[in-house]
Image (cartoon, rainbow, N blue to C red; front, side, top):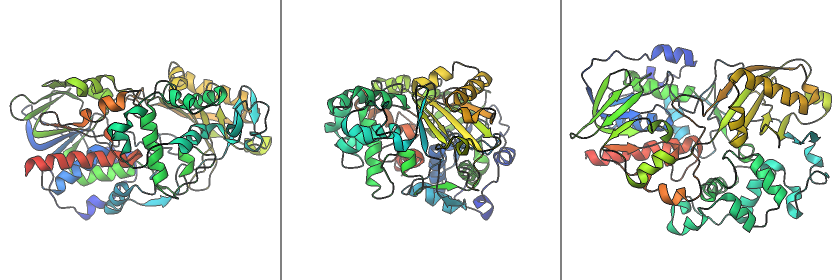
Amino acid sequence: MIKKSMTTTRRTALKTSAAFAASIMTSPRASAAEHSDVIVIGAGFAGLNAAIMLADEGLSVTVLEANNRVGGRAFTADHIYGSPELGASQIGPYYARVRDTAQRLGVELSPGSNINAPFTYALGDTLIRKEDWEGHNLNKTVGAERAVLPQAMQGYYMGKYNPLEGFDDWLEPEAARYDIPLAEWLIEKGISEEAMRLVNAGLVAPDAWNVSLLTLLQEATRGRLMSGAGDAKGKDQFEQYALASAHVVGGTSRLPEAMARYLGDSVLLNKIVSSIDMSDGGADVTCLDGTRYRSDFVISAIPFGPLRRVSITPTLEGEQGAAVRHMPYATNTQVHMRLKGEPYWEQDGMDASLWSDGALNIVRQPFGYDGSRDRLLAVGTGKKGERLDQLAPKDRGEFVVKEIERLRPSTKGKIEVTGVHSWPQYNFVYGCRHSYGPGQVTRFAHDMIKPHYRMHFAGEHTRRLEIGMESAMESGERAAFEILERTI
């Protein structure tokens, strides 16, 4: 159990994931249930923030994490060359909760995040420089669209026609008319057939007909209201805020590791929750290994994908139950590579990153925080990612290298695969983020976060006002406040 006080030792951020895993071991537990005031399921930003807030108020908390590491989709891949971020990386300029927690725990932040070389564009087998895009004969977009770079096409329409004005407008009843397919709205706004094709080529969702416009408008509104923080011209959402954002020195994982260290031995790894029983005035949580934990309240801070595999009594019903069963999650599969020899962009004279309308979405060439430029990251999202995930990891890496070499001959013989990662195939996560389908914001957003008997809900999928890492922290804060109100 944890107490309210915080020691200097607990403020110390860990240096590597390996060191952290060695310092927090799965505690041996007796077969009899141990009691806490609150059990938190999931040790990502949402669960850890909720646990810290409750602990600071004097409640005893146990955090059960199914994986052998904390952080959820914040995952610094220390096992891959260059320690790339597999998930969360960008601490936006207005991520107050994330920044305050880092300061409190002594975790160092540094300016800039997710900074990559500009794109060269591959349409079919043809490479196009960004400065040639507007007038190129393969640019079949129409009118003002011609000046919009492919990765910025969706943002162009969002910026021009977004009807939302406030942070929470997307949750108001009148916003329900925008809970429609993105494609339907873009067609209404006059998008050309070719511009729609370019939007689809870069989506995280399966396609523009299978993602709710409303959730995308919320994200665009949140970005716009960060007044002056980003440069939207010709850039996607990550590029816009790269320079205005911050990163965790040593990797994003260092922050959730520090949060877990603050909580001490109350964070238990390798605890796969199999059932939650709230039928007798408390909550009994049983794990796959047979260990049992008892509490007054439970916070589910895991995605709905893994929650579907947990037996819950009384069962989730109505729209809340439907949300857990049917919430779609987006695909993000990655191939990380190391560059050898002379920089290929100096050889062919083009920008080093690549946007493609082919088998890959993008190939980013990152600028290391130490000034290095010896890595590549290929990303497949949406249906492209689903197709790549049909290949075994080794075959996936080989395919990506061949595809890059085919599109960019100057890379031939200069790329070696250092790691492959798929969020849909990663245990206990099953997707890079939730992705409301058309009609699902109106149907699910309000009901799915309501407390269910003694069970409360957190996680980025339950966000209200924020986006990214900050939305996970926000959700954990909300769940903690809900429980504190019930304990007064």
